[in-house]
Amino acid sequence: MKLKNYTEEEYSQWDAFVRNSANGTFMQERNFLNYHPAGRFNDCSLLVYDSHDKLLAVIPAAQQRAGEKTVFSSYPGASHGGIVIHRKFKTNNAMTLIPLLIKHCQDNGFKQIEIKLVPRIYHCRNCDELDFALRYYGFYASSTELATALHLLDDTRSAAGENAQRNIRKAAKLGVYIKESQEFKEYWDILSNNLQARHQAHPTHTLEEIYVLKDRYPQGIKLFAAYYEEKIIGGVLIFLLNNRVINCFYIAHDEKYQQLRPLNLLFYELINWGRKKGYHYLDWGISTENKGKYVNKGLFRFKEGFGGRGVLRETYRYDLN
Image (tube, rainbow, N blue to C red; front, side, top):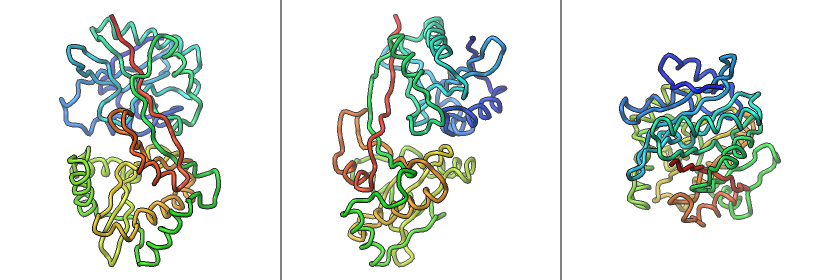
């Protein structure tokens, strides 16, 4: 087995590999990662080949700083990076790869390694040999966050609780309706105002960046919106990261219409849409903050009210001498 630093010459090979991997999403594709302006991140991604020069894995990564330490880190421009592996990747491969990665980072002056694994619900094959090998060789969980996901194929009936169902009926009765929308600018105004009022924060992406990503993934990024009297009053921007999971990347509603309960009806319709399309999970994302140190109980109640349950998002760390 050998490691090779990524160059643009491997762009097409890398993306084809991720699309056919055991645990990849489009967040690990170069087509996604390269939307960031040149120079924003110091790329140090790796390709992993076997002795016959067959590609076994790719590791999207960038150099980060943690105080005085130089860190080999899962790509900071994505929710998760991890180690994306071939569908026939086995335990012996994992046990060989991790020591090689440690040595590579030592030889290149890194003082720390951080790997943020792809959550299990996105895997089309079991991949826990990676977790085992990381722990076996001394990696530890530096942070643990908790997301909420609904298993769409578990039951074709609604998993929503009584309160959620009551709010779904209320929204529909009051005239709220749901449709796929192209009103990204109007939605972004709602989202930005929402984040500013609640958290004094801004969306991770600019609207211009979303337009770029939508152009790169025209069928992979969609806006489902709630309308009232022909006016957009809320929505969810979804990333269809692979053919298994609907990822709810941004969720927001206009506070002036909160009493209409637009998000309840929106998720009811999105769940039904996902089931019809054959997706396995609806991923609402994390409801923890500050790397898992704060639990937003209200958000968990809302998501679990639809039948969602917890999915761990773990970041592994290794300290080099």
